[in-house]
Length: 352
Image (cartoon, rainbow, N blue to C red; front, side, top):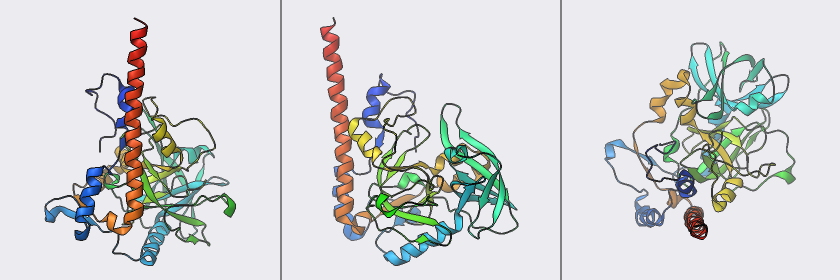
């Protein structure tokens, strides 16, 4: 995935390009038509069968899926604490007795060292900050913790956010602060169970947007899941139980300032509205790319496999509606960009 536009862009004005190029929508009308044509075969796109991984959404019963995601998330998701509960994280790697946990920088900023990791079995371990994640130009809302343990704990299976599709089921795990039922926001996918003994919550939802350039602090994946305060730093899991992102922002934040891209430009109003009502995550690839300790995981997230999908067969009405909305947002951004350019050119003529 190209995380940033190339420096040799054909657009002389980066802000003009930003209105439309920020949004990668795998939902163009051509794709939708193609998916309808091939839904009987349960897949789309072509490729060598020896290198194909089928994303089959309709073959697993809801109960089996719920059990699978609950089991995986319960094993890998951890609590981050100092003297109080701070947020969530997940175990991504084991090296001997050393474990590496990914979380958000803002989770750690809510407290102070020394930090503590509480694992799925209720045990606690002192943790050290291995690094905050930066690429030299931009800061990312990511942090790496390490802890030592004699117990063997499962680690996350790494997926690839490149293959996410608008409308695809997605699952966010973490430990929310206590929320009253009246404050809950309805999701567009069945809500999975909450583990009452540990407090772990797993929220079902669907991919709403995928941006081709990151917002400030690295956020690029938008989804409908009802993420709550306290779930920041937890894993975002795809249908296969693979981690594809790191939860970090819930929908409808309390602050009213608009989201901004890393280069300082802003999304068009229609896209801004869609971002505001989406929970947001940072792609898992970014934490791996920017942290030397996780380089061994890069081969897993960058596997060159042609993915085929029967997403439209899983829930055609809902998926088609979400993809149509995404396409409409893209068109509104295009119209907004053209109108802005026209107004600017008109102003330039008046001022001559």
